[in-house]
Image 1 (tube, rainbow, N blue to C red):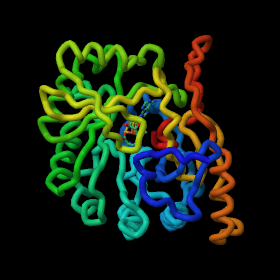
Image 2 (image 1 turned 60 degrees about the horizontal axis):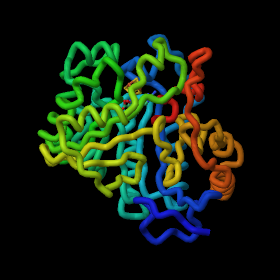
Image 3 (image 1 turned 90 degrees about the horizontal axis):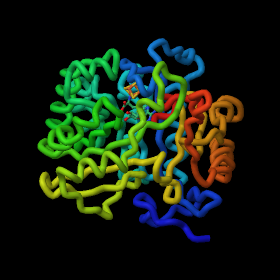
Image 4 (image 1 turned 90 degrees about the vertical axis):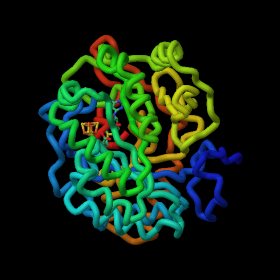
Length: 345
Ligand code: SAM
Ligand code: SF4
């Protein structure tokens, strides 16, 4: 069986490493530590979301146990996400616990955040070994920021970026491309990011979960955005990969990098190296499919290291070949019913 070479799998694979039926090494675990958030981005959540009862959530120690089991099986990169990971109570306890694995099997501990709590936590994150983070930012206009996030405060996010950079944490900005909302702002976002030494990745909206808006109205194909940007910037394709689905270009005018994530117009599944754990202990094997395994029940019944290991192996043996996002235009229903905030993107 050929093991596809991904950015995370260039290391010597561990003996009991996780290889899926298509020969892909699973070396990247994304963990949604909460489904809650202090924002309500219009493309991600409805304004009146109902959240999970706290008893359904894995405790921080249970999350630590599962993450550690994955690291034992060759996971090299761990990303905490959500909902908003930094609103989970006592989250720094988990970050510190997981930070102990860095250099001992784990290459990188990172997180994706909306930035609202970064000013408070940046130096502690750096102290726990976090060296890079992704911060979501869809506009540079404070009023538009309030509109798209419904509840967010732009200035707090800016303070968060300052604090993270001051703590020595590298930042990649993530921007969801939204038709008639931020398409005209993209050049300014690129200049802003590169002016501060940050990469920027643009993401197509994906049809996940019921929201209050019409998704077809929000959808902006990145092929169109890219050709518009090429009127203004010179892009050189790069082979640089972060182990994720983004394809990067170097922008000649700024010297910085822009990534494009195109789940709708270009399928990126062939090099997929990741699985996703939700805050309830459900392991999703693909962002765009419903195949999953209930690791919480394993934890809370047998709970032995062997039982957890067996459940992880069984799940990986069912990882599907790829996703198949569609928006059902007859009723505008999303093709995947769960919200992105459940699996963290
Ligand atoms: N709250 C954190 C944040 O916003 O960065 C982490 C969780 S959020 C679900 C992770 C990423 O998913 C964000 O960059 C967000 O913009 C993106 N996202 C959310 N819903 C999406 C959708 N339907 N399509 C594409 N990206 C989405
Ligand atoms: Fe919250 Fe992130 Fe979803 Fe926005 S994208 S509502 S910040 S989870």
